[in-house]
Structure formats: structure tokens, C-alpha cells
Length: 199
Image (cartoon, rainbow, N blue to C red; front, top):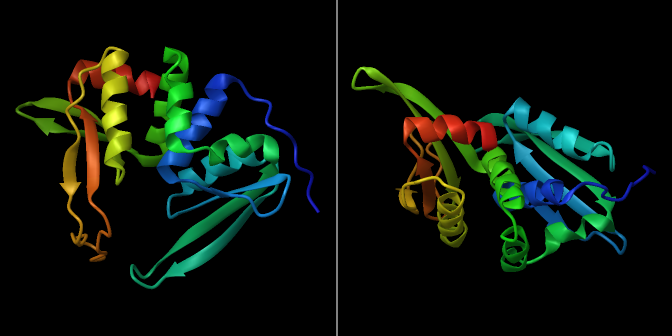
């Protein structure tokens, strides 16, 4: 029904999509010659980002869904693209080996992961303004790699830290964490400013 165009991006574009995939995208093969990519979000900016990434390659479907546990709505987003996007189905370790070959693909991957699972914190601290960049994920192996890559490209991130243990319930909607939730943070103000330009 809808035209699917092959992936035509650079290595950096590919690395960025892999970072997004490992952060907040699901991928599967609905049939031969096609790849389905999907996510869900309550944030309009994420819905816009998903559309901007894939609308030139395939039709983007958007459906609202009511979340009974949080009593809020979210968007379910999906697209079916050409099988030239099948690199998003590769095992994590294979992807990481390819990404690690150059700093440009490392930065691109970290950018994609940050857009999916990152946060910028700005707050007062001892009379000054504190700025932090934080990566979140339940995959400790992934965040350990993020920590090492940030060191490799010249930053000094804090080591992976258990932000919320399995069983923790959020204070607002009391949603239970099904897995341990880890974080890696760049906390030095100067590095955070520079890091925002890269990731």
C-alpha cells in the first residue's frame, strides 16, 4: 500500500539509528523483505523525532493508547521499511564492534541513545548552576560500554549507578520497575556544555 525506500544514510546515520534502537525502539521482521520499527511515547517531541527519521522511507503509523496503570494516553508509533534497515536487527555486540571503529560513529550512536534514553538536568548547586547529561537504561552492559566510550572520546563520566532498583514504584503513578534501572552521568559543568553539542 505504501512505498518503501531503501536506507541511504551515512555510517553516522546508521550508528545514530542503532543508538535509538538500543535505547527505545523495537524491531522485527513481519515478512521477508521488510523490517518493522516501533516505539511508544507520551512525549510529542519523541513522536515528531520518530516521524522525521522514518517518514521518507516508509509510512509512519500513529495510534493513541490509554495506559490503565498511569491513567494517561501515549502514542504507539510504527513503520514498515525496506530490509536494507535490517542492521537494526543485529545483536548488540555485533553492532558495538562496528560502531567502535571510529569516533564519529561513537558520537552518532551516543546521540541516538541519548535522544532515546537521555536527560539534561539544570538546577542550582551551591550558588551556581549545575548542568548534567545522563544516560538511562536497564541494560548494565550497555551503560558500561557508554561509560567506556565517553572516556575514550575525552569525557570523565561517573560510573554506572543503580538509579532505581527492581521493585521501585514511581512517586507519581506508582508504576513498578520490572528491572534495575541504571544511569551514567556527565556531571562536570564544562563537559556537560560541550557534551550537549555532541550528543
